[in-house]
Image (cartoon, rainbow, N blue to C red; front, side, top):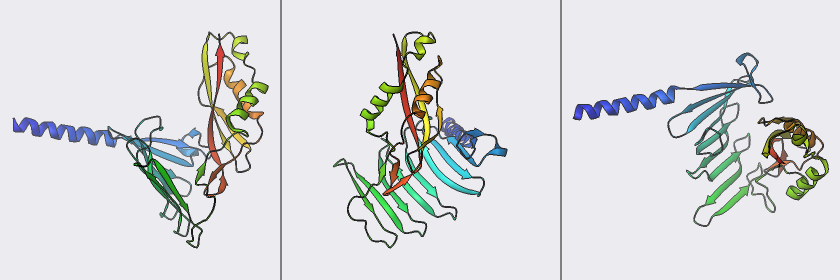
Length: 247
């Protein structure tokens, strides 16, 4: 009986090792579009250990490890455990830790000289967040300090609704004889530091001309309010859904 248990344990160990050994490598160009190894500037390794998906990304042009991170789901919407971003010299640029409920517990961010730029702490008991920013000389930044702010359409949701009302041709799927239903096109694009948009693309395909119409409408939008990190505007990816209803 003991021998059978031992064999079972050994089998489970080798099974888990086999899972860890199955590394998938995906290559991306400078615009983060999938490509082959020959034309790639970034590679991302992924393996699944039975509970989470673990990633390592590399800058192939400058030849260094850029990130290590994990997600509980294959869609990369549930971060878990440690997230680390590295500088080219191997020092840590950013580090964070996510709880099992995918809430960020803490994070530390550093200047290139190694001094602390900002820190974030979450208090689960009080459900509160505390953020502190620092100047390069180590002194604390007083007053309004923006830790992270997502890029937004001018006027936020109400402004976006008005833009869709003015420019979206909701009859496009009807004209193209789409069956009754609710269709959502998910767009991905870059919001630059000045709020301008680029690299607009549809992440899914629902057909009947809806992707083309959604992209057209987004291209008509004014400059967005850029993302902000540590009080500075930054270039960032943004996702935006546009929904069509046929009835």
